Image (tube, rainbow over all chains, first blue to last red; front, side):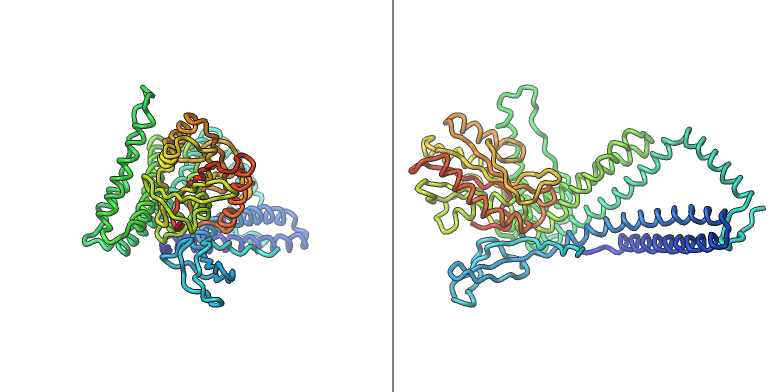
Length: 131
Length: 375
């Protein structure tokens, strides 16, 4: 499915704004820590309060954007076709192409020249993150 | 005066004056929230619903564009099909009056049959070059677009109504169900893509099982859009049936089962129904469950027909379901669901061995949309 530019533009602007807020908040946090080292506790509490709110807001916004973006790859997930030879069980896995359907005869086996058929058509699982 | 830059070098840094201003602002915001809290909440909820309405509009337009593109590619219409497609997207069905429930099922069945025939004829008109299986896929694709259009219009209706009346409860109703609505919309978008390319969907699990059982056997056609075969398992005569594929089709298995039971003069040892069923959160996709009763969804007319004939001839009806989510049911089939078909065949064999004796006749009905699944 084609991606439309207006929706993406809004998404990029949101990401840029959230990252800017996050960057500024982290910088404030750092300045606050410097104030604490100098003994200026009033400034330290103030900057800590403001920067933590900023970090939380930015992270929450980025998480929401991530959730929204994660839908797109799921919709564009790859579909695979499995062709099987009934005689020698030789298997060919390839991308789905228009006209494929389960139990359709699809050419000859490369190993024994017997007819092959499509035994499965399924959606490929998106790669899971390594822990 | 508040210094623009404080001693810390940060804009709007702390000072004694600023502390006083912050305190006053906090008291003020507390009082304001006491009186206008609900209005603020309404505004926030409207903002959230507004975002969803925009996303739904985008999704609705995408599925409509996909339908148009596929119609033009496959159907090769001589004229622009947009006006006809728009008309089909707004088509509705009036269910029969239920004040006198006698004969209600047959009235509904008749209305559904008329609707199906008209819809198919309309598709054929705007896609003259499409073959039978492509017409079925296009029909399903337009139905997905129609459902998406309906969801968008309903959400927009409540959003605009809530905005106009500023009614907390109208907005609350729609805001509460937004995650479920979005889940269904995402599923429909995935379904539209699968139908446009003729890929098997999760709902076809039952049809896949029946297709496995009838492979290599001679097929017989039944009314409407159902195919059945005759095969032997462990000395029992097994009649697997499913909707005719590989086009998107669910057929009317209820009618076919009635016909087969009639042809066998009621001498059927049991009916096994295989279907995809919605799992609960936490359940594993592709897991199987066994039960009793007619496993078939839809408006209920097909289930009624099966139950009626089963009671008349005292035939036990068993059900095997493949668990999946709503998104998985109408998006391209997952590997776990595809692989579950083998396990279902093994369960059917066990059920046949346990509950019937040699020489008995068993019907195995593979229920579900057979898009992308031949026989």
